[in-house]
Length: 289
Image (tube, rainbow, N blue to C red; front, side, top):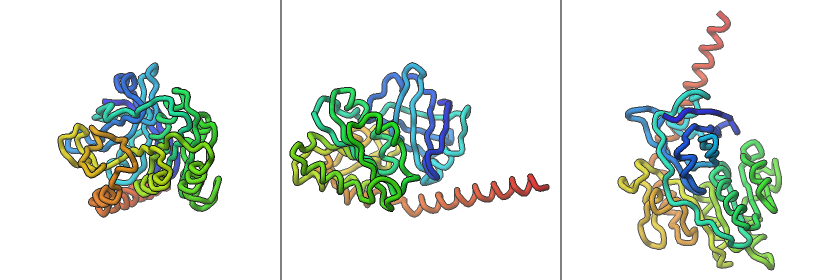
């Protein structure tokens, strides 16, 4: 059991929960994740990257977007309630050292898992340029936290409602052509974003790390559900990653695999919203009577 100590809704579909998990809080390192299960017996297991941790308080911070049945069920839990199963920390931690100038690129909810990596890189003495992107201003998250770490921060939105009206690859290329180009780029976000960030840095020979969030079941390398092709070889995201050389990842193959259950996910998403609206209507009707 892992008790929810705090819950916030960061945007319409994005939630943050702070969970009491003292052993995980003590052991976790930047880049690692947990697997949780909301339904105690036959529930789906989902991976979530640890966005932050407080070893003294014994808590970890998780950020998630409601996209299917399990994430909607998780969003229904409130402070004081328990998550039945929580396992971690899992995956290989981020390799942290003093590289020099590091550019951290976060897209949408990908800014949350990027946060602990940026914090660790800054602590190691690196200079940080942070690029944050989202479809619109109301979908930007962790802007305050990233601004506190960054030596330079660039905010982009697709609709221009905040910062620059641009994709994150536009300022990334601008940083790459500066006289002092980045020593490392870390990109986390939607697969298509990570693919084009990697393609942006490839001509400049800038090492680029991406964190992959694939279909995952057990998180120990046994099921093979999270397999990806990296440098022509099969890798398992849960035990070989989640971070890989972005120039070596076969993103097209990964995106095809991620789409395998997209219709099921969309159906569950719509059903959960309809059920929530129906409950609200019933509660409103009960109040009137």
